[in-house]
Length: 105
Image 1 (cartoon, rainbow, N blue to C red):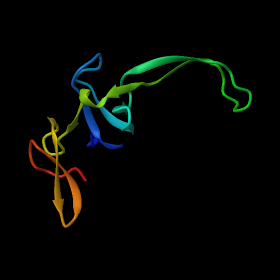
Image 2 (cartoon, one colour):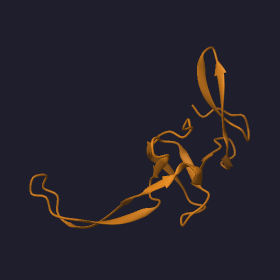
Image 3 (cartoon, rainbow, N blue to C red):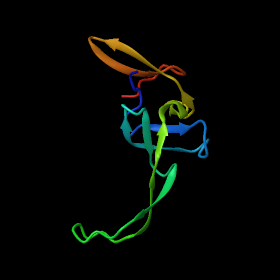
Image 4 (tube, one colour):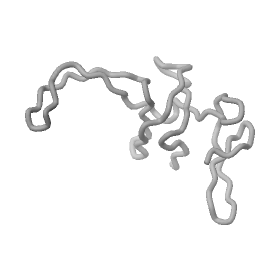
């Protein structure tokens, strides 16, 4: 399955506890079909102090993974969720919004 969402894309969550919220994609894990979105799906981790790296211990909050099927790209033209298509021009692949036909890249 080809992943059509990339880092720095603006996405909206369509299901789950953060439904309706938008954010920027921080990273994509194509093997697990997961994305990490800035400020969404916050999970808490208990971390031990590490003298080697100088990190302190405690409870830290960070973004957890969201399945790719639970997010949609936001159309750059009208800021609404859209599906993504791929067109070819001169051998180059371009991602296109199915809603308006505008290019993402």
